Length: 333
Ligand code: UGA
Ligand code: MN
Image 1 (spheres, rainbow, N blue to C red):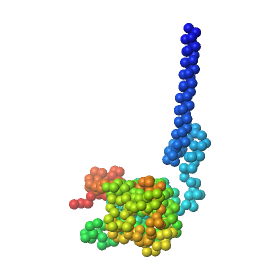
Image 2: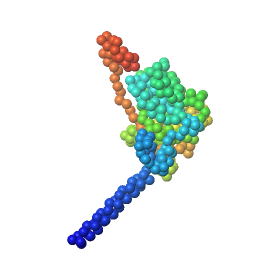
Image 3: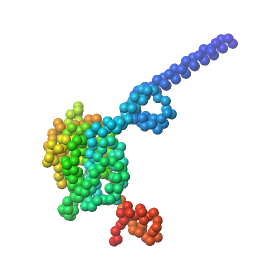
Image 4: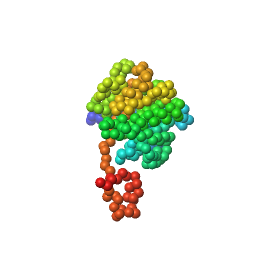
């Protein structure tokens, strides 16, 4: 009897020790996890924390990590270089949705000036109204494609060229510092891209996702040095990269008074970079030596014009009359 009781006590003490040991290892692995937090993880924590502030009790150490990921205070922000984002656009059913999405992405970027260059002859009031609503610094330009490219013999059109040349001319006249970047209205941008390019000295380059059957277009970097190009369509292009792959410093651009984009479909990027008269030694490989994708060459499916049903008299004095103003309606056959 006595022996059995002693064994029970012994077993009980053992069980207590084991529980304690398991508990210790659980808490220490929890700590390891915290210490292993990457910058991305701490950003998530920071976001979570701001949501549940006061509910989560974390150590000061974590708070330090989080503070470093917070946006800089306004006074510091104002001294950072401006990012001029140049967006060619043109009227179509998807234009306002695309510009809404892009504009709201850009709203998250400090010290940004959006140059929206419209392939149009007259002001597009919808676009201007959107720009006003967004409330960021912007410039709206009318930069129509030259008439001759609308002739049928030009089957492949130089899309966005008049727009981009108009915008860089504006930069020549109005900008003195910062960097510019060509951001088509239909691509998808991670806002980290803008911090990568902000301090560009001459030209910076970075990978673009979802391009051709290669799924990617990027300069190839080996041991931190330029090695070649990875792009599904090298052709005879000197710089076989996409429009979204590079950014140019404004002060550097101002030393190249002849730089402009050629009206040659498919060769706009390489032609423009050639006109900057650079060598690969002038190029910085950003996005962690081109190991990160911060922009994707997404495409939007083509949509249809609204049918003329909306014009029927039975809809008079309803909300449809308001909605109709912002819609593109099928023409009478
Ligand atoms: C690809 C490249 O990513 C473009 O930068 C390049 O201009 C184009 O090919 C080309 O070489 O022609 P892709 O997706 O095929 O782009 O072209 P879109 O997205 O249809 O057009 C590029 C930009 O030009 C867009 O921002 C678009 O809004 C604008 N665009 C397009 C015009 O301003 N006018 C047009 O008639 C068509
Ligand atoms: Mn596109």
